[in-house]
Image 1: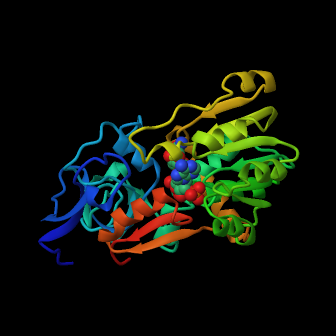
Image 2 (image 1 turned 45 degrees about the vertical axis):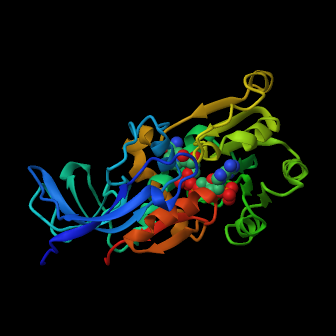
Image 3 (image 1 turned 90 degrees about the vertical axis):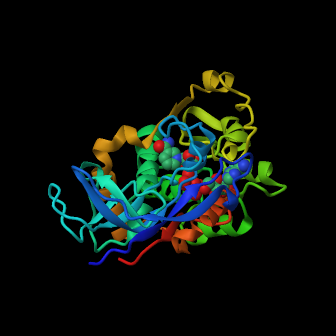
Length: 338
Ligand SMILES: NC(=O)c1ccc[n+]([C@@H]2O[C@H](COP(=O)([O-])OP(=O)(O)OC[C@H]3O[C@@H](n4cnc5c(N)ncnc54)[C@H](OP(=O)(O)O)[C@@H]3O)[C@@H](O)[C@H]2O)c1
């Protein structure tokens, strides 16, 4: 295969002062990188974008380090191995790794996972990717949802949320999803099989939320923090569990709000467990999660939603859309052919 001399990269042009803009990024051409010892050259097929990457740009994601302008935007992708001969990797292998927002990348062979080419890149990055696995462990290990319990999830139409709700449903829970529009709320029920979908922007949201949780909440899967977390805390059952997955309501701003009222009083009185987690804590068990998620997909009990973008240059717009709640499912940016 003849390589081009140069490839496209998306750089962080400036750190966002408030809400993220596409102008915070710039596209540039750069020479194709040369792999060193133990490294391989890969051609990016597709990348995904997560809301947590905005926390990374804010400097509030412990695992992401300090954000810096002038760097290639980081991110997870599926790529094809171009240079072979390191370990068990072969030219043409499809791998999952930290490609960043660029057409070619050099990565350490030991950091790459070879993936099944018969499964789409979108599934490898979405439902079987970090967000799907986050949903799985958040529901099963942190929420420990039981059949017959009431399970509520925020950002329910999003990448983590739509999988979390379906996992809880597959485990026999009554599932209530909260999203940002009437259309998304209806989709949760009609397309994904949730029991109830709520629009957090509705004027009647407080009443709707109460009516949707007549037996209160056993597990609240919190993707947003902010007002929704506070509303859920006031509806928790005794011995309920709050799964602190992320704080999407506080990422796309320079002035994050204070924590919710009710902590710790409501937790004490109702013996509620509120627990944060990072998916990386479960790295040794990713294969187990992927096997179960795949089995549910094959059985028609889990449906993967994606928001599809074509071309690397569309990645900044996909990121802005994700944070604004324009899309449902996992953003997938197609960068090259498979
Ligand atoms: N703990 C971990 O290891 C881990 C791993 C991956 C992701 N996460 C977290 O999981 C959460 C979801 O991530 P994702 O990538 O799947 O993103 P996502 O849910 O696909 O997108 C974020 C969603 O948040 C909602 N939102 C935006 N502003 C909001 C506000 N002010 N109030 C309430 N909702 C708001 C929007 O949906 P609506 O407008 O429809 O409500 C938006 O679509 C994030 O908090 C992320 O940090 C955690």
